Every structure is written in C-alpha cells, then in structure tokens.
Length: 73
Image 1: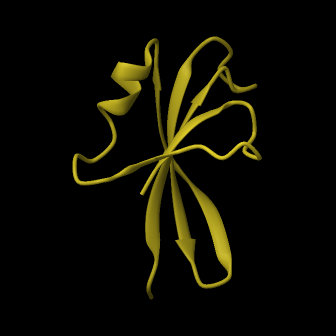
Image 2: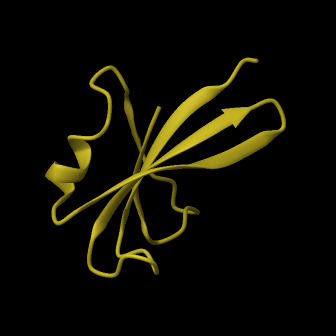
C-alpha cells in the first residue's frame, strides 16, 4: 500500500495545554489517519528533534487549526 508519513507539530493542543506536541499521521489514497505515535516537549526545538532529518518543513496554512505550528513531510 502506498502511503505518506507526515508529522504535525502543535502548540497548546487541548490534550496537552502549554506544550508542543509532535504527532505522526499517515496519508494514503482516500484517507488521512493519525497514529498512536506522539512526543510532548516544552519547546519547539525539542519537538523538532523527533522529526526524521530527511523530512521537509512545509510550514502551515492559514486555514489550519490554530494549534498547528508546522507540518513536515
């Protein structure tokens, strides 16, 4: 099955107020699915340490949820 891995870094999500959270998502034909993999950090720099070094930072869209800081793919 072809799928893409994406990481999303959030700040202050409802389940981790005041923290940065890096969450892994899977994208495939017709689906966008969260995984159970996530890391909680106190700083953005620490959250970025969990992103594989080969991934690219796409930033965020103005239409993204306000908790989203950046998306990596």
